[in-house]
Amino acid sequence: MNAHILMNFLRELSANNSKEWMDANRKLFLQAKQVLEADAAVILAGLSANQPEFASLRPKDCLFRQNRDIRFSPNKLPYKTNMSAYFAIGGKKSEGPGYYLHLEPGKSFLAGGIWMPEPDILKKIRQEIDYSGQDFEAIVKEPTFFGYFGDMQGEQLKTSPKDYPKEHPYIHYLRYKSFIVSKPLDDDAIDSGRHVSLALEAFACMRPFMDFLDRAVATSDDEGYLI
Image 1 (cartoon, rainbow, N blue to C red):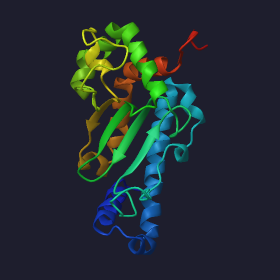
Image 2: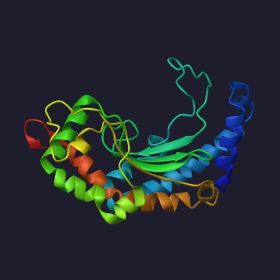
Image 3: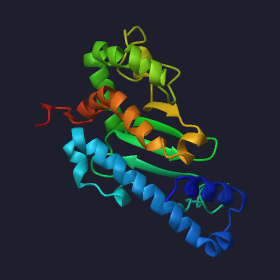
Image 4: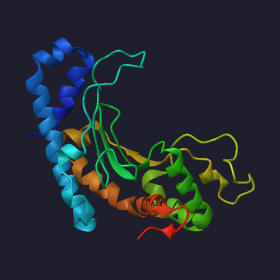
């Protein structure tokens, strides 16, 4: 099944975002979902080759629902106009770092890291940067990595976080509230199916960044690293 089926579905959905249209075109949705599940299976297999922890995950453990949560949103459109998957040890609800595939006409991208972690997780990441800031900076400024992703993305505090002086040598990183790197994907890459190999290439490139975050999240506040 060709990857262009998925993008064509999303284009149609964007122009007809209603339950009535979705009900009438459920076959198209299921075909697009099948394409994404197949892509996710290939990505999981690729990740598992070097990270065996991913071998226990199934595609459905990584895919997000198409329905939007509209309870507290002024936007009442019922469906997301993208399809996406999050590859993290423990599944898409994991609090640890993960790899992300976002497919949306004109807005597709690959990403990895941790977006808006809970306060205890954020504290651990900041502690790890405090302890090993030189290592972290070496990772994000490494020429191949930086050439691939550019600067880390995510919202930053305007002031120093609690317990860290503004003169801290790595205060720039400590101010981040999310720790994300990303790379855009053009529609042609997806329609041709090249996005899967590009995803595995990007995820391999960001592995040192992910390992640093994983080490931070696995750190006990009282006992050092968990074993």
